[in-house]
Length: 447
Ligand code: PLP
Image (tube, rainbow, N blue to C red; front, side, top):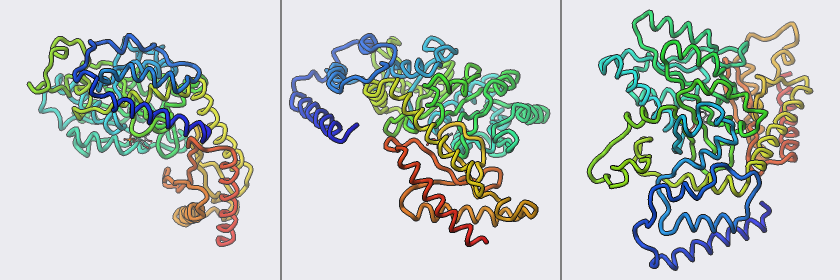
């Protein structure tokens, strides 16, 4: 938004809120509408183009009068699902269910608990010490944390090694080897966390082959697409989630790369009943007629906490104010900027791209070969890592741009993640100038 338009819209929102509070006494205290009231008024797909703020506020007023529903229903999710192509999989509104939670950590813990209880139902509650959960050494630490909270023994949370040869994706063959070894030892594999867009390098685990192994052993598959799955709203990137139809659950965070405000994590589960069985509570003080008659979905039973924020309103406003076509264009723009940056790295002989780029994150480093000469590549990985760490430190100290780092396979890499809503080509040009300047300095020191 242009600053002037932003100001105008912000004033409209303030007026809207002031009017609401000015008239609040005129509104009934209790909701005057029945279950399904909102669902029937909301289109089941997101608009392609942006809509004026006036229309959105007008509709929000209809939604909030007499009272907004505190527990969001799924139409916003359906809109997202449609633009991401999940609908053509078993992740259709008919085949599963969605809930908006706060973070991937919440989503993983909820699904781990559901999968745990499903398996314990088969093998008996005493079997909890036998349960094994699998991820890779690139899986986000929320997986381990969630598994530990769910009562899985620390020694039974596997971080299967990945390698540069596999672009740091989890190999289905390696999963099979690990699972077979555990089964042989009398353990019970029950959960796999596969990632689309790992935190360190945005690697993509092969969902199809992993799902086949998991199916064979009755393992619940969760797909963590926290950052990168947002790209799948563009048809040309949907291939990254091929095989998601084999998964039991799937989550991604529109607050990471779909421009939603914190916090917002969309979680789909194939069998909501399993999740609800694991998480439901029904004390007398929460009981009400419509819930007892099963006329509404009680989302308190789909998550850890009971109280919920009205997160779907964010997605609803986001989808309507941008429109799908604009969101797709933004994703494409960031990926294009990342491609341009990657090309500059590739054409500078002193630098190398550390891992193949999939989305809008580029991982690079000062080439060890260049520093020590073709025939004298140093074994001293620590020395090279420190040199790259110094480059990153001085780049960030410049105050002009901010980059991060990751250790991938023992190698320190510098990461530039492009996706800020205000990022433009000029910032990428600046980033490149700053990187070159600090690499020059580092090379002088290293000489
Ligand atoms: N999974 C992946 C792949 C991530 O990149 C991140 C955060 O960067 C997370 C999970 C953690 O997400 P949250 O903070 O929503 O729990």
